[in-house]
Length: 430
Image (cartoon, rainbow, N blue to C red; front, side, top):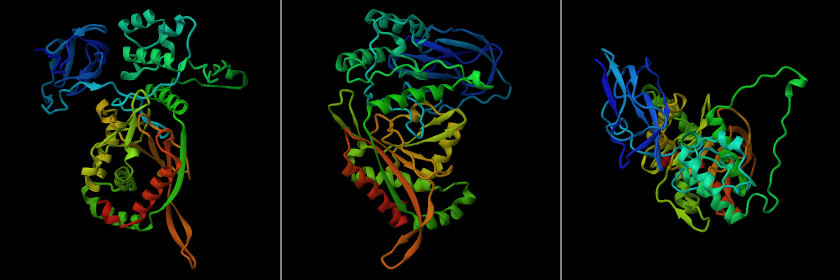
């Protein structure tokens, strides 16, 4: 017998809009599979199936308004389908709309402090073609038309790049403050359309949603943040020897001890020693928000692009706990199981390409964070000890930072501090 799937407790929200239907009638679902996406003015979330079975009837459509207790669909339970455990994550609480997925250059920003937006191009009239293609709800479209805003020029901060009313307001505010992108000669000419097939065989593939969202945030962060990158090398000879001992010790438990776990602990020590690196500019750009927590973002490579899950309260976790959590979030990222909350609230991001190769790179700051640490592949180098050269394992570090918040001297002090921590007593990082 089919049972009704109801909207669970979604917090202090009523009449939220259905923005996406993720299943169809006849689909077989498992417990906790997402069924629909809903969005309010402040948050977006997915509603999961309470147990496995077959969707026999959908009771909602895109654009419908639902509240707690509304019927989403009818489900015929599978005979052996387990009911989702009533944990906190099983009934998703409203989470802020997700940000751009991470990239080694710059993952998605956390919503706690709204980033300053690039000065937009001021349209002389609404471009109906780009306006129609923009991802926004009818109410937001109406609001944009009332203000004369071309939605095709607005970057969305909502789920999957959806443009919210706050995005439109921020666009207008930026125009009023900066006078449009033409001020200061920053107007960029559009890329020409080119028929690449004239010169040989080509193949066109659509960018993934993660790729497209990341591109928008990368561009915004690059043109609005004055970047400086500080390079350094950390002597990790003793640390690597210590790590190998731990690898052997925890191998039987299935825990993979990587150098990245040590870097997380070292970065936390750096944020405590240099609090300005653990801050964000507010939306006005006139106040600096100092954070009293230590959440570290980790760039994870996935088939669809890079995302940045966050290890929360890294200062309160042991190295083994961090290593275990990194393994878990990496699997969730590759299986597309990360929730919006898993990628929010970061203080500083680490982008490690050491497992792939390369010597140095310049990562782009992940606004609203003010710094990002890039790590390349370590290699053995001769280091002068005062009398001769010793073979030492050196780890290349690249710290990019927002020059509005951090000056060059502090940038150099931060990388020097990290290098000293990594070269010091490894036991202190446990």
